[in-house]
Image 1 (cartoon, helix red, strand yellow):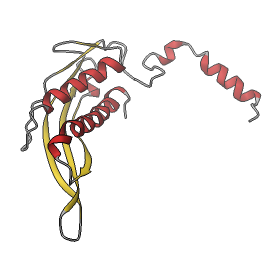
Image 2 (tube, helix red, strand yellow; image 1 turned 45 degrees about the vertical axis):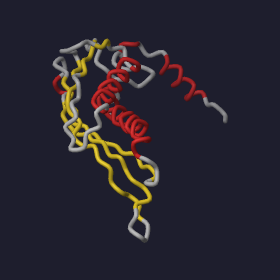
Image 3 (cartoon, rainbow, N blue to C red; image 1 turned 180 degrees about the vertical axis):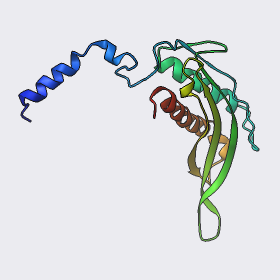
Image 4 (cartoon, rainbow, N blue to C red; image 1 turned 120 degrees about the vertical axis):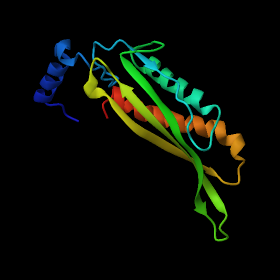
Length: 170
């Protein structure tokens, strides 16, 4: 591909912009206001009809780890500049593919979590909304042997949705 001079000039200009224009952005795409220094994540109780006893701890820890690992923010016990709270509202298994004899061939684990996000420094960022995701599995397999892995997979996706909304403004 032949590079033209205007493109190279614009590219050079883009790299030379003063950092003040990019004060809230990073090359990773994270967009967190400069005055936000820390975050807190309250324990997410399981209020679903069907209860996985490890799910509350799993989701809470995954959310904490995501923000510790992918932002500059420090985790604090409570009253962070970013505050996460909520509850697990849905945990269910539904058949999604059925054979002629009405036996399920595929089942779906669905998890729904209500998330409340507060930022006292920037109240315009606050929200409270449900997030959900699912994982399908072969109905002939023993769910108990798959449950931990499926729950982790689904929680990872929900945590990514929350992260996208808070830190990437999606």
